[in-house]
Image (cartoon, rainbow, N blue to C red; front, side, top):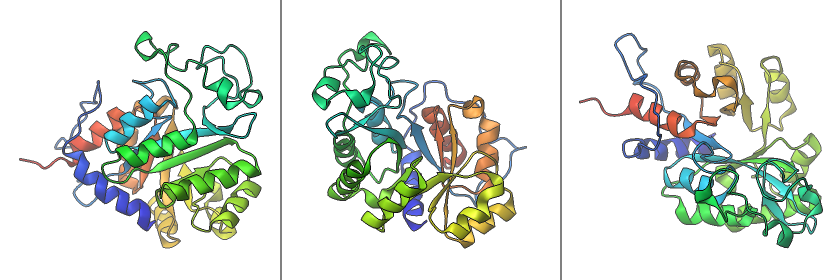
Length: 288
């Protein structure tokens, strides 16, 4: 948990200088709101990058998060020739001009021919599907402080797991990242490759103690508001707590954001990352 706490300290510094959302919620501190003075703001983690403003999982969407001091969630898949690329769907139809093809059936060279931006808007024509290395290189180059990386492993074989860990080490990003959505067997392989790999898992309310007892999960991804007892349990076990809202209907709900914040969490993965970042900026801005 120390690593994420360090990220939060750095994030607090950036909150006073960023106003990156187009339509920030107006739900600022009011007399009837709780006292936030004793709380630390959670990290805003962009689901597939800042994808309300840029085409998802592209370098544009990722760069926007990095340059504004936000964390990033992105999806990793393996090409036909074993390269690690960033795309949510296995099928290329939704987010490229490639028609209905399976990503795993295409080589990296073929994937790089696809336009991954025109579907979102003409201004993004020519955007390419990035590789994992391109993403990590961008993070390393552009981050002003330290950016949290939520690495969503969609389709990566054992050889790809070795590449993934080696790349995180190469760019010195292992300590500020965690891997999630992989199988239990894959999680154990990742830990065996490097004990510093942090494993995240989506955990239901009834499974908190079970996951703690198993001892494999470092980052608890939750979709519910923690009770004080549940929060204290996870803190005693030195677990990181990240809310995984993503694209859910409540992804743009300041009241829900507030409830999670008051429950004591480390970060929120959210589609509306700019709006959430502005929301906590308003809450924690120095009062005149």
